[in-house]
Every structure is written in C-alpha cells, then in structure tokens.
Length: 125
Image (cartoon, rainbow, N blue to C red; front, side, top):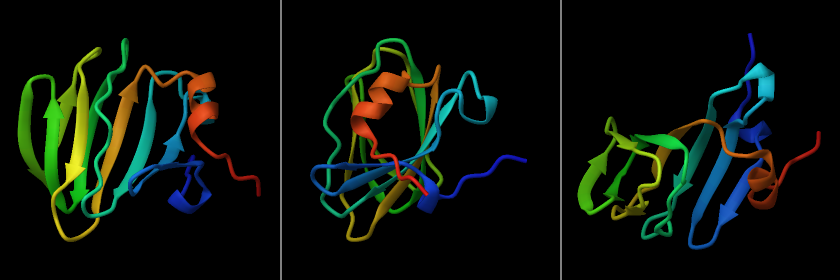
C-alpha cells in the first residue's frame, strides 16, 4: 500500500491565500497517468484563470463553498460537488464563503515534472 499525507507533501503557496499540496505526482509510487493535489483556499481567495493544454482535470469540493469558472460557465460549488475540466479549458475557483474552501484535484495525464519543480516546494525529511 502506498500512502502520503498532506503534511508530507510538497506545497505550492499560491499568492492570495491558496495552498496546494501535491499528494501524488507523475511517476510517484509507479503512477503513470495521474496526479492528485489537495488545495486549501482562504476566504476571499481566488485562483488565477488558467488552462492545461493536454490534461483533463476534476475538482472535488470537500469543504466550504465558492464559485467555479470553467470555459464560459460560472457555477456555485459546495462540499460534494465535482467539476470536470476538459483539456485546454480555462478555469478558476474562488472562495466566496467565510470558511476554508477545500478541494481535491485529479489530473491526467500528470503534470510534467519540470512544471511541478517550478511551483512546488519539496520538503526533505
């Protein structure tokens, strides 16, 4: 069994109150087709609008609520919501609540190792 905790994971402290933890990176534990992140979003924080040219992605909201933009659509999201983001589609999430918004993101194929190295601070234990 392969396991990794949030506390053990590399972190990307995004500006504006969002922290992304890389729970599973491409090649980790032999994974070939998937990467997983856990993201904590402070109240009022907003992810910049961005797209991944060849990766598909899902966001699963675990806690809190906010607004998700995907392509030309904007929808409210809350705990238990899953949003599918097709490759090349601009997307972003904003925490509109008074509590932490938490989501887990799965991406396939996994992000390139070079891109991860540039954005995540790897902790050495």
